[in-house]
Image (cartoon, protein in one colour):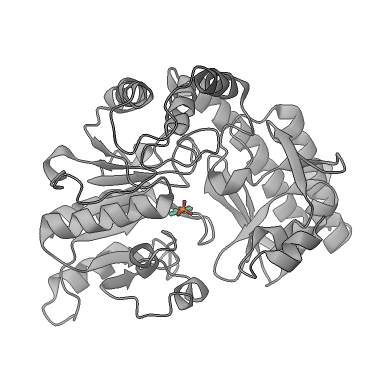
Length: 426
Ligand SMILES: *Cc1c(COP(=O)(O)O)cnc(C)c1O
């Protein structure tokens, strides 16, 4: 059945090449191919499936909604499903965190949420440039691509990507170089050649860029620099948000309040397309319909998104994510200790963790060996040098343990016997 993809689907297809089987159904942290073979999912739709596949609560609400002929397509009309999402989002997410944001519904993808943020920042400040960081990933449309670091992805644009300046992310020059001071100098110096920008766009953890974690103090100082030069701070929480980094927003631990926040991937909770751009009220300076999109009102996604917020009504879920994170981190650190020549360490927060490989191609080999044994995980970083692990936040401990065992076996397949026994290391 793979043949139809090879003969008819565009060469642009990507993940299918890493995981070349035909998937048929999925439940929780498990995917099944057409032959009924099970794969443990440490990929989670690149972060779009934080609550696993086909979560029963969301599925029940969705089926119910469809059965009663609830609105499916609603543009930006008022619907009951949308009202319920907004009320729940305000009461469960915004209010308890003391956050005051207006909610914009752009087209239902991450890159749309980013485009809206960039446009609005330019409109509000009257400035054109936007600062982004080395190894950033913000999406594939031209605006979002212009603030994305990856040379291969940028090359796909076919036109000049303009009106952005790149600054070094936290740790880009190693731990001893303060990259906030570096950026501050460019902004304060009249000879630097860097125009004052409308905004700075940042991921608190660069997911595609190699699981690079920004230090909390770095984020706080970035916020101060933004204030000092009247630039808006845009946090792209599309992948690190919705619990992936351990709390609903990835920036909570830093105690900062961004001017604009982009959410998408796991916002609907069910893998349905949905995105929001959160805007501090004073910056909500859009004219009616100035940014729009046909599929802004994907109401089935609002229904499952509202159901997903059940997880955030108390602190239990955060505690569970922390426990799962600890288990996975220990296992990855065990591997790094067992193969010190091959792995240089573990990066990440929450359930977005990476095992850093010391040579090119190893992360890919590991991923392929794991796939053969029934585990799906991706790679990240500019040279795919990081093996990336993102199980569903809801993963059962038994599935997590099985996934870890498969990974350890895959490491043995690729690297041979550990220099240190795995059970000693873990
Ligand atoms: C996936 C992602 C995007 C783009 O989202 P799409 O839905 O693919 O357009 C933007 N920013 C980050 C951090 C992402 O992970």
